[in-house]
Amino acid sequence: MNKPQTGGMGYLFYGLRLIAMPNMRIFVTIPLIINSILFAGSIWFAYGKLQHLMGWVEGFLPGWLSWLSWLLIPMFIVAAMLVIFFTFTMIANLISAPFNSLLAQKVEEHLTNQKLIQQEESWQRILKDIFPQLINEIKKIAYYAVWSIPLLILFIIPVINLIAPFIWMLFSAWMLALQYADVPMSNHQLSGKEIRRRLKTQTLTSLSFGGSVMILTMIPVINFIAMPAAVAGATAMWVERLQEENEL
Image 1 (cartoon, rainbow, N blue to C red):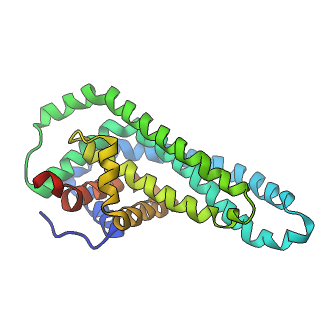
Image 2: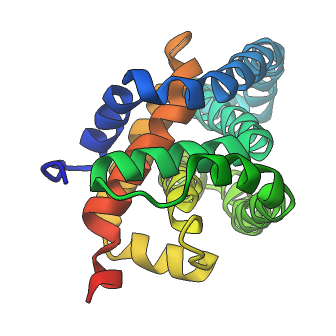
Image 3: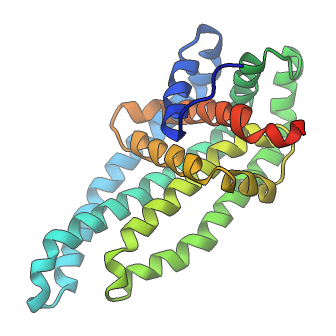
């Protein structure tokens, strides 16, 4: 096994190196195409919506608070971009879930030098597990919706709305860590509740990993490889930090 990484950001950079390996590229191609198409659409969609958002924020503030627009508008823009890009990320993961599962398997085999499943069985499992994986992705979307609604309400509560974007960033980082750590951990049939519990044992690492993915997701062009890099990085985090309980 490779030397453990120093933190969540380290795992994301590690994931970038892993997906560049020749034997991993075939498992990156399809998610890369899906990610490219969806994020190109998200950029086009976000451009139009953010213009409306800025006008709404300026009209919402009373005259005597107009000076706050220089602070609130950037904060609302960041929050809106997180919502838009995170939503498209969820959709991309929903579509590419079977391929991400196979990528996580191959990365884990590379890191542990242990064969998890035969090559021909891997492709058979993709077909067999498509429906269960889609159900799992829908469950994660439901989890996201349940928590995001009350957090979004914070944006309309006076005073609290000043810190709401920062709370939303932390929530988004947690959700992205959960989204990608779920891929290798689901390969071992861990439940959603158990996955969340294990991530909480590495809270700072999980949040820094999710935050790093969030930043990478918002960088034009580079965001096209965010999904496979995050899957590979989360698999390394699973192998080196989160799997230990299975070995006790």
